[in-house]
Length: 109
Image (cartoon, rainbow, N blue to C red; front, side, top):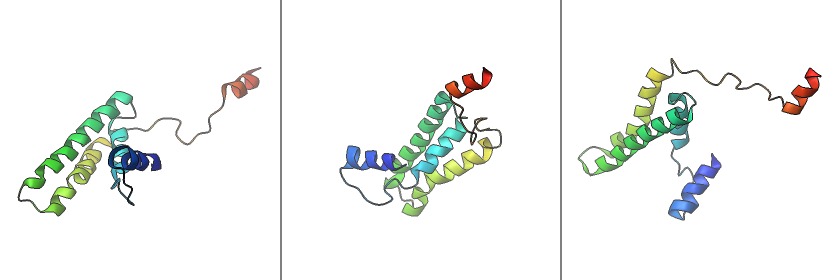
């Protein structure tokens, strides 16, 4: 997660401030869950969440309180996760040790 903040600060803004990613790592994790841990699904979910973030930024000119506008991406993420996470399953080998191919070959012989 630190590399994301680094990319944001050096690559885009040329300034670093603490907590500048503003919880977007949570939204990225939600995109992985909604995309069911597949590259295309995660891409689609990321595009959707990016669209919601852009919608929130464009709505700042309206007469809506800033606090309500700021929670739009996070509330959308929670609502989407509430419906999608029930059916989503994580990868089967999460938390299990990885056996290297050479170790496996030694065990078989």
